[in-house]
Image 1 (cartoon, rainbow, N blue to C red):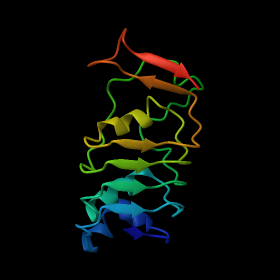
Image 2 (image 1 turned 135 degrees about the vertical axis):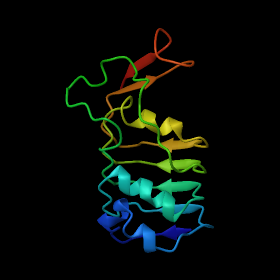
Image 3 (image 1 turned 90 degrees about the horizontal axis):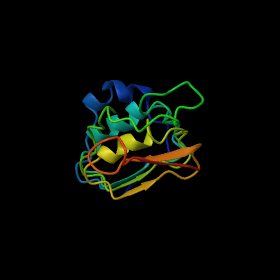
Image 4 (image 1 turned 120 degrees about the horizontal axis):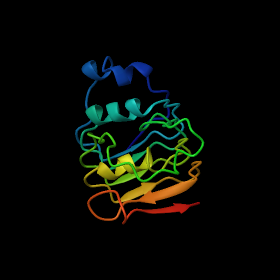
Length: 149
């Protein structure tokens, strides 16, 4: 278990630090809660440093840039979005803790995480989510369900 209680460099997302950094190939659990992470791209860069992570805790980070942000106040009022850009990292991840990460849209932010192939546990406590949009079956349409919180 590696617990980083330091500020991650902003250049991590740009690959500048990652290119010269030692990778932690045996690392399975990483806790970077309250490390002043200010973008989802920084989180994605962690996959290059720790390619075999199974548990990642990023609570109290600013992940509001995860997915297309809709500036309209009724961003969750439309049908579920089928065309979200896939999350293409963290192929081994089973648990992701995104508590208090400023996630405000289930359909545009949280639902992107459903594309992580081995994800079993997703924690999104203390986020300003107003509705949950769940797709049933292969695509959007009549089977979509939406529930206001």
